[in-house]
Length: 325
Length: 133
Image (cartoon, rainbow over all chains, first blue to last red; front, side):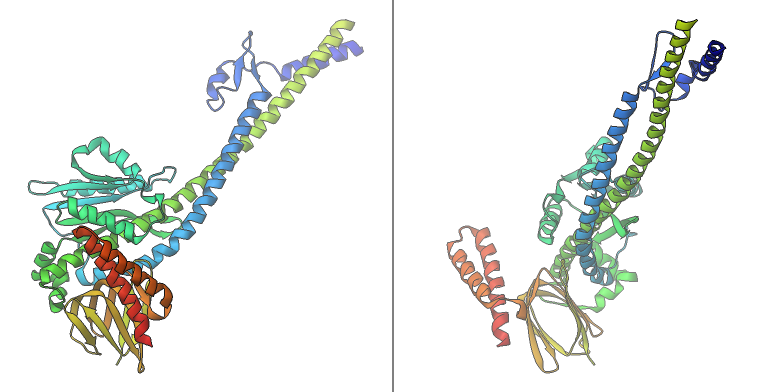
């Protein structure tokens, strides 16, 4: 009687762990490496393998959490600088106007991007807008050239617009950003590149979760004169009497150069802020994903563990019943 | 009637309030600005900016750039600015002496020009302190 009961029990257990059909192996693409087929086509999920995977996911989660905190602290440091530099370019815009619609022959697009990755989509949006500007401004008489700041934009633009690139500058953030460095950079650009209008493409930092790609336009002094004479937004410029220095043209040139370096400074700072903010949110979502993955793996681990215990029990019971019977 | 003065540098806003009168040094000499001045845009030289508030004069050392004056609003954009009260007299004097020594040692046109500028900046800072006294 006891024997029959044991045998029935054995059969009940046996039916519980009947090997799943082999087609199921292909239907779970998430864990292709966790299962290895035994000689009879049975799937054995090793607890060791799941445990290794859990450990590596946990490590990744720790790293992404740490990266998020580092990005947050860097953001705080740059944010005050950025807000202070915002006041600087507004008088220029008030005096000289920001005319993205100015129609000029030689455009130069200054694309500002980050050097390091893992910062979400901000670099791709900058590059997209730069390419859009290039297309808009290329025609029979017009031409557009690129000046690239940062590795990420360089990687993307070198691929298809190699001949249009004038200058590439990388590793901007090795030393903390300050105005002298940026003004030297601006000087280099002004010396080496002929331009009628400079369009700076960067990501403006509006809040920790929102980065708006923006274009700031700086016109060369001749174009400013032309636009001022034709009236419109820049008409007010003529109402100012210009003093100091020999000629109005010289002053305007100095002004344009100063405007360029101030706008560059602001743009570089804003882009750095956006980079840190984007990195914060990217790392945050990957930590969360890692957490979800860890939960799923824990469930699998428990199931595997219980399955192996059940298998052992069955072996013992059937062994025992085989001995007696 | 007062003037609204705003002195900005790339790193921060140095001054933003109302004043009675200012004296600014430009490439072509010093100009005094009273309320209802004509609108001008001018280049600012490396020199001292004097600000008058209620019969008290304050000085600020400016390191060159631009000023825009219009409608009783003055905006001065400079590469660097320091309030006279913020400058340490000893340090400014030392900087002046170092700049003078460098100028004498300078060789080549470019170095001479750079040292000249450094000297003028140091001198401005020293003058800013002296002018208060």
